Length: 418
Image (cartoon, rainbow, N blue to C red; front, side):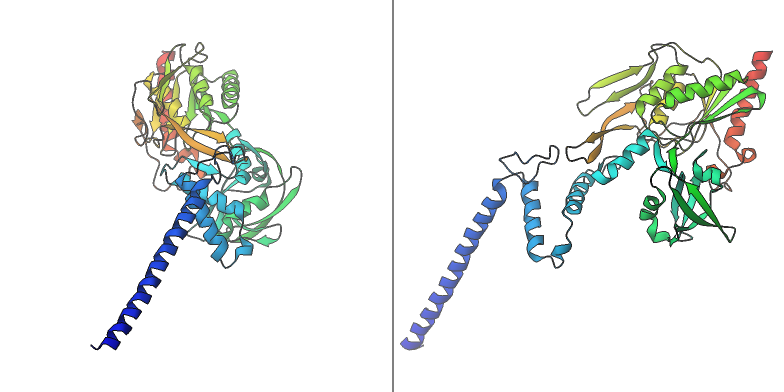
């Protein structure tokens, strides 16, 4: 290579190195600036809703970087709903706990969530499902004594139209909002039953979502269906029991099948009605292993023979009651093993009006047995016939669990009479 070529090569090499060094220095300065920018201040304090922190967490910084990228590059920037982005971010963060009982509740959903806990709302009173097989919205069952039941809506009815608007399987998330409304207003619902359309004009009312029902069976056996533990459930249950006793009831069946739980204090108050003062109802432990024992506070109100009916959907607060009465040998349990939800959630209202339902404690039976993911085995296992598709459409004659309970209590009554 001659001197001229060497000189040219050295010049090219110098230029390339200058470009590389310049790019590297620029990258380092930019990175340092971005790092300083993204870690200097707090973006948002989720629990308090205040922007008061002077030090940013990694999460705060990362979320702000994502926001900047979206603002700069997202095609439909003008359609961005900041509240939805925020809710989605928090929901995703909480979901990372992989706890199916802990959830973030956006502000707009907290009212409905609270209504479900307290046990009342304004509407017509139907539970619906999106039936995957038929690809239609189907009435699971009308709430007893609700406007829908009184109007003639039945389990299995297919909902076609609401106020003239057609709804299909994919509309399940929005149909409930259109059926609900102001108290005293009317809603027109068209259903399909046995291949024929029927139209109902129903007035919206305040509906008790889980009313307690009762009746007298043969052999002076009282029957009570307790679908959940809502506000004042213990008081209402006591009223039902007293009414049954006034009608001649000598023993009692308490149906907890499909009772998914509710307010824990209502459950322990009901246990208190059947237990002697000082009996252990449950034991709880929190994340610091702090143990708290709940005992019955008052004298036993009812001494009559008692049977509980349970199934795979008997969960949470209803398992607390089941375990308390079973372990203290106060009641016999008939049916199938319970669900196995042995943890307690606390609902916290955040400063922006949203909520956080979070698992705060695990509970154990009076005998110290773990329930979570295990369930409670009945004293007598009885399964329903395979032909039964829904307990809500179950005829009394086909209810093997109820009939076994009646049989057991009839034996008890005969023994006592003799």
